[in-house]
Structures are given as structure tokens and as C-alpha cells.
Image (spheres, one colour):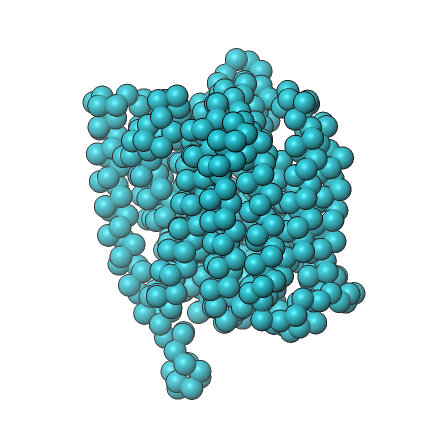
Length: 476
């Protein structure tokens, strides 16, 4: 099982690095303003993806009969309908979106992006079905192939077009490849089937996650929309450069934890003691991963921005540190969210993310009063912290999952994030304040590592027992 986790983490890491390399390459070859416009394509795609997402792929993994061919055919049909609706919305909303960002002449590009949700809706779900057996090779091959081909096209397209259009065609090529490979590598024939009972179950399972998707869009892209629409495209270029670096590991860790822990937690959802051990392990791993992300930004943020983007993106350095604090807190919530979904309690992540969204209107008001980008991120940090606490409390109250074993790692994580935030807000390379914040941060991290090693040793033994072969008497 550990080998599978490491393999999955490595593959997701490679995919994220290739994606990151592609974005950095385009950022270096076009102007900062054009990169700001290109980043709005990501915002727009996220708008359609997150606001029409019933999490049918996760339902296929979570539900006991998700492996049947009829169930798979039903959710594939529902997914195709979702893609068609998303494409229509995207096409007709292109004009208002372009006007919002102050680039009305780019409306045609947003209309062309409507092809992306249409193609994604036609993807084969066999790669998700195989995750029920902890077989991740197919989805890794699909994602890896799509990312590699798109990245290979980034340089010639950027040299040829010399503006935001390079990102547009790269995104279209990536989605086309993704959908094509999902069919080529599938082990079952692709088909549709309408089952009213499955549709009702999908709605019951997915409506909280649909609302959660809307909240997730507001969380992931709301800050970017505020910067682009109220501050300017140059500032959005700097902000997007930092956010791209901060979100890359967030996506890797989130995907890895979801694909690794969700099948296992779902299998023991009716076995309270085993579920509790896995929940504690998943939450502890999420807390630890979030703090590590913040540490990397504190220690190497300046080097990453200058080395990857160049001196034009100097203002992004302090933004990266505090953005990684916000993303680290988001990662910390992953264990609780996965445990809730494994219990089909899909309202948990929705309510937690609603708490995070509360920071957006406050940030908007602050911008109208003359505040800047730093203020937006500080409100984001406060919102993410509130969402984490709310998610854990709901699990404790509703699912009777323990909270006491998490008090110490939560306290250590809070101290670490405080030190990282101080380092970002007072960042002056080589200053006493920065060195002091880094020293405090590392000391707290060492304490968290020691605590994690002690706790995970106990949980690891229990997980090994749970995953013995079925014929083992210890598991009967």
C-alpha cells in the first residue's frame, strides 16, 4: 500500500511539474499583460468545471455498486449531458466574461473554450472505475499523455503567436488528448444508459458537491477575479505567477490523497474503529503536507520566482509565501473532506467552503477602500483557517470522529503558519526579521515531524492489519 501511495504521489508530482513548466514557459515568452489575459482562460474553465460538477467520478468510486457496467454507462451519460450544458453556458457567457476583465476583443477566445467542457463530458469513466481496485495506471497515463503533448506544443505556439492565444490552443490540445486517451486505454466499451434510480442517487450525492463546486470556484478563482477586475492585468500577471506555483503542489497533494484514501475509507465506512484509524491518518498527513508547502515557500520562494519567471516577476515573491500559507491550510482540510465524502456526507465540504467564501465580500470591500493584493490574501488565510476548523468540528459532531488526537498537530500547524505569514509580510531577503521567522518555522516543523512520526507509527500498523489478504484470520 505504501508503494502505491508513493507511486501515485510521484506520478501526480510529475504531471504537476510538467504543467507548471508549461505555464512558466508561456509566461516567459509573452508579456506580463498577455499572461494576465491567459490566466483568465484558467479562471473561465474553472468556472464551468466547478459550477457544473456533480462529482460523478467520485461517486463511481464511493458507491458499493459503482463497478457495474450499467452504473458506469449511466454516469457516463449524465457526464456527457453535463458537458453539453457547460459548453452552452460557456459560449453564451463569453461576452460578459470578456467585458468583466476589460478585454472585450477577446470574447471569441472564451467562446472557443466552450469546446473544453464538451470534450471533457465525453471522456471514458473506466479510468475511475479501476481506482476502486487501487489501480491508478490508466488515469496516470491519460493525464500524463495529455499534459506532455500540450507542453510540447507550448514553445512553438508561443514563438509563433507571441501572445495569450498560445495558452488558448495549448488548453484545447490538452483536453482533446485527455478525452482521446481515456477511450484508447479503457478496458470496457464506452456506452450510455439512462437509469432513473442512478440519476436520483447521483443528484442526492452530487448536489452538495455541485454547490461546493461553485464555492470552490469562488475560492480558487475569486481572488484572481478581484485582482484582475479591480487592480489590473499587470498585477494579475504577478498574482497568477505566484498562485500557479502555490497551487501546483496543492493539486498534486489533493489528488493523491483523494485517490489513495477515498477507496480505502469507503470500504470501511461501516466499520467505525477501522474508519477512525484511517481518518486520523489521512488528517494527520494533510496537516503535515500543508505545513511542508508553506516551508518550501519560506525557504525557496525568492529563488523560485527569480529562477523560473525572471526579474519581471519580482513583486510576486512575497505574494508566493502568503499564498502558500493559504494553500497549505486548504491542503490541511483534505483529510476531513475525504472522510466526509467516504461517508456520503457531501454537505461537509460544502459548508466548510462556504465559510471560506465569506472572506471574498470582505476583501472586495477592502479593495474599494484602497486596499491591495496583500489584504485579499490575508482574508483568504483567515477564511481557510475557519473552513478547516468547521470541517473538523462537523465530523466530530455528526460522525462522532475523535478530535483530541488532532489538537497537538493543529496547534503546531497554527504556529508554523503564523511564522510563515510573518515571513511573507515582512519579506526582505537577508533581513533579521525574515531569518528569525524562518528559524521559528523550522523549529515548529521539527516538533510537528516528531509528533507525526509517533502517531503515524501507530496508525500505520493498524492500516497494515486492515489491508491483509481476505483469507487472513486476523481480518475475518
